[in-house]
Amino acid sequence: MIHIKPKLNASLIAIIAEGFSSRLSFGLISFILPLYAHHLGLSLTEIGLLASLNTIIAIALKPLTGWLSDRFGLKRIFIISVCLRSLVALLNAYAVVPWQLYSVRMAHGLATSLRDPSSNALIADNGGEKAVASAFAWYQTAKSVAGSLGKALAGVLLALTAANYSFVFFVAFLLSVLPLVVVALFVKETHPEKQSISTPKVSTQPVQKQAVKGIRNSWQSIAPYIGFGFLISCTAEMMTGLFPILAIEYAGLSEVQVGIIFSISTFAVLILGPLFGWLSDNVSRKLVLMIRGLANMLSSLIFIFFPGFLGIAIGKLADDAGKSAFRPAWGSLMAHVSSFDKQRRAQTMSWMSMGEDAGDIVGPILSGFLWSTWGITFALGTRVALAIVTEIYSLTLANSMEKRISYNGDTKEFKDTAYLPKVHILNDDIRQAEK
Image (cartoon, rainbow, N blue to C red; front, side, top):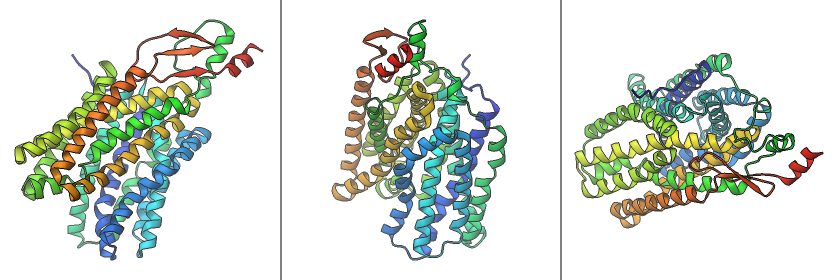
């Protein structure tokens, strides 16, 4: 019998609960913020910049905030990010001119840059080596469901309050600040200096044991993963923001039919997310990562050749299935790569997630440009081509990464792990250990 539920501890449950509550709040804000900005007189271009400004700021600051998380403690920075994000939700209610909205959105980007590296590192620490993908799967599933519920709740609240934006922003503030006490009481962080590096034992000699502590993830070893995250995220997000237009304008579906498709997709994510997490932990992370690219190709081809209700529904389901596969496997990959230098785990994960965030920005812009210039068929065809490139890159990355540790000119083979980075023990560290 297959068990896909990870071994949850109180710390992990608290992190997942915070993710659910924060994404519920974010769903409210993401739904009403464009409407509120339009109400204040911002143009569509200005609203588009407003919507992406927080991600741009987060990308720029993540290397610094990742270092801060490692330097001052994951839990401490995580709590600060929750407080700042809650404050941002409240400040939206008092923003009445464009520059105030932009300022608050930039503060939101700062909160995101603080939160993502610390939360990812905490999940990696508390998920366990054999269930880290499942931990990321449950975390992402909770966030996905909460995001959908938040948008639905925002529409209801706007209808009940006659578009009282300030009230909805205040509700978002309450939802964001709600898990703060739970995080403060139950989230625990490990201390890297008390742990050994999660690499195989090279030798039993004292000098070698000391030298193992010198392992560092170099920029050269992390850069390929940043590119991989960018490619797969860019391809995945090309149709995310434009899907309602694709379904209604291109396929001719009604708003009700589109709502049904979203409901089916949300229900499927509840099942597929934990399932793919289990597959990544127990079968093959490499296989689960490849599903994302295959899903991009399949969904795009279905959108092109079967533009009806059934085709759009199946394509959307395939697309979301790919996203459900990618998130836990990517989280597991970040946890694995960062485990070679746990004292800089958050910093390593922040660099890796930068590529993913950049893809989230570039993808919709690219698809919008291609669609408006050459048509939807060309845009979807480009998405298929990019998905193929991503699959080739994925296989090349897996095959090129040497599955060994280089120790003072000698190599020691160890257990095969997909997408293992090349790491080195510095000669200076060896010489210092010999002294």
